[in-house]
Image (tube, rainbow, N blue to C red):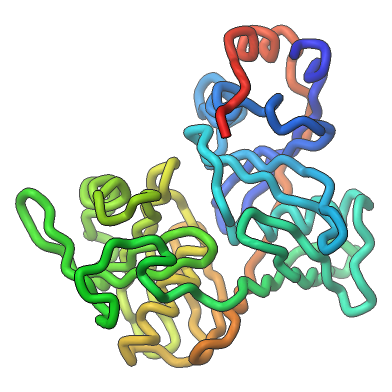
Length: 303
C-alpha cells in the first residue's frame, strides 16, 4: 500500500463550511481504508475534514463518480455539499468539460446527479446548482420503522422523553425535528441518540429546523458518522421537504446554516433543486512517512 499511495496529492475544499479532503489517483477503493479516512479527517493529527471524496471513473452515465466517506470511515450514499465541491474540482482542474448547457453528471451511491456549474468573471466555478432528485417519503424506503406509515410526523420514544420528527431520504436517511430556537436546540445531546435509534436501521442524519418565515428556515444538523457539521446539503433539502409537507414553507426556501446559506427549491413530488457555493482552500502532497505509518495496519474495508 505504501508504494501505491506514496506521495498522494490532495485538495482541501468546502461547501458552506462543510469541509472535505478530495483525492484523485486512487483506482482501487480498498486502498482508501476506514483507518486512512479517519486519519485524514483528524483535525489535530491529519488534514482535518468532515469527510473524504475520492474521485473515481464515472461510467457511461456520469462524467465522474463521487466515492464519499464520512469522517468515521463509513460509506455515505450521498452528500449535497460534496457534490458541489467535486463539480468545482473537476471543472476548475480541467478534468471534465461541462455539457453545452453547463452541466456535469456526477455518479453517487444514490444515483447520477445532474450538476450545473456557475462561473465567476475569471472562469472558475463559484456556485453550483444540484438536481438532487425527488425525495423518498415512504418510511420503509428511508429506511425508518414506522408504526403508522401514513402520518407526516412520527413519535419516537427514548428512555427519558418522546420526540416528534419527520422522516425523509435524499438518497441518505434523515430525521427532521421542528424547534422554536435552533440556537439552543439539543443538537449535540439528542442528535447522536436519534442517529443510532433502533427505528433507523441504517442510522440517520438528524436535522433541527426553526421556521423563520414561509421562505426561510434556520437549520443545524447532526450528521451520521461525523457529528454536528457547519452545513449539510441533503439535510437542508430534507428539512425543506419535511416542513413543506406540513404546510409551513413555500416552494423556494433559504436555508440558513452555521456555515452559510443554501437555496432549496421543491414543489409537491418534483425533484429538489439546491444551489450553494463551493470553495477550494489548499492543495498539497501527503508526507510519505506519515502515510506509511497510517496505512501500515489498515486492512481493506468489508463490503
